[in-house]
Length: 176
Image (cartoon, rainbow, N blue to C red; front, side, top):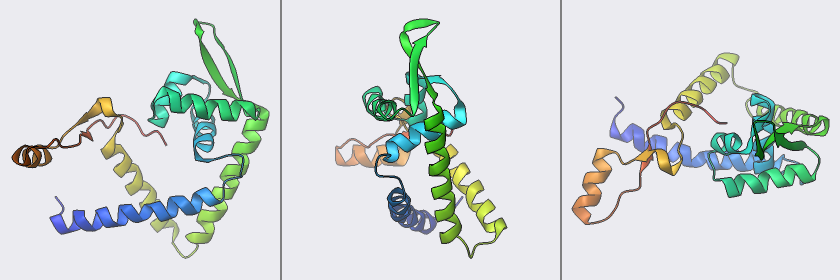
């Protein structure tokens, strides 16, 4: 198990990931913010799905998912058709325009990563992919319903008469 100082340094490095995410957000087309890009990416990766499944994969609530879906639907990037099994539900699917937009997003992201990581070896990029995948799996779902508080945080909160924020423990899927 890693030492406390390693976890502290990891926390500092993870907070710096915000700069990477902001740089990646800057390359998105003005009409396709991050939430819309995530919807297109997940539909491209997982295929047609119900909005409830998309909300699970995005790890956000249904109201946020609905806003993202409305945005991409208004631009013609997805179709929403009745679910034959449940007419109250809709099946979301990429349109040809949505696939084109997804291809553009992929190209932009790949070019940025190739530029920023141009001095990395293939092995180093592969190691980063593997470690980030493992990190994401360690955090699991991250939705509030699936969270518990680690024992050390719970004990500290109890000692101070406060409530510790819960942390996810599921490791069954990697949404994005």
